[in-house]
Amino acid sequence: MPETHAVPSDAARAPSTALVIVDLQVDFLPGGRLAVPDGDAVVPLANRLARRFETVVLTQDWHPAGHISFASSHPGHAPFDVITLPYGPQVLWPDHCVQGEPGADFAPGLDVPHAQLIIRKGHHARVDSYSTFYEADRRTSTGLTGYLRARGIANVVLMGLALDFCVAWSALDAARDGFGTTVVEDACRAIDTHGSLHHALEDMARAGVHSVRMADLAG
Ligand code: VGL
Ligand code: ZN
Image 1 (cartoon, rainbow, N blue to C red):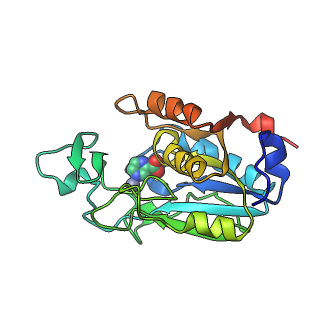
Image 2 (tube, protein in one colour):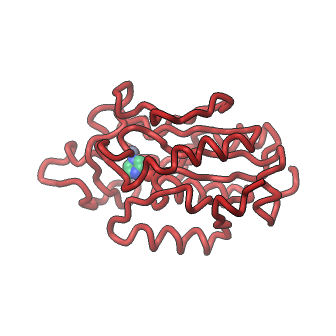
């Protein structure tokens, strides 16, 4: 396996580093059904960052109608309630990113024509998937680890929405699978419910995920 880089700015220039742009989709932008505050601010940052990477992966939250993560699938519950499912606790969300609906489209203005792979996740009706590597059962792979390894990728840099859910869970899985893992923190925005942002930052630091800012990757 190629060398993993300790210094994120070096890692970003290496062909063995992939950029993963997480869930820049209409429903997560202001006006969307699960709007992340200020989420639209990171779209131009994605466009800028992507130009520095040969390998770019886009992720797309992609739920069937009636998905288990939707509050509307659980009578008596409201969005942001937490319930227990066979695979663990599940935050219930407003309906969002339904397969083929406009809310699941990529953000208007996202301009990354050289992205080579789109990972769609959360498509199993009864399992959520914040992470773009493993579904919430922690076992079912999306195939991304194998794809990256087969292409000689040793490091991943992540940005996007939402920092405390899909970005954090993806970063934790990337680190667990042995990738040098960096999150560009000011190129993310958070939902922040039930202390999720605090916990995500703590978990990522504990797992050895590097945190950088756009300026650290300049050049
Ligand atoms: C996300 C909540 C539900 C995310 C996706 O992209 O962070 N959050 N589905
Ligand atoms: Zn979702």
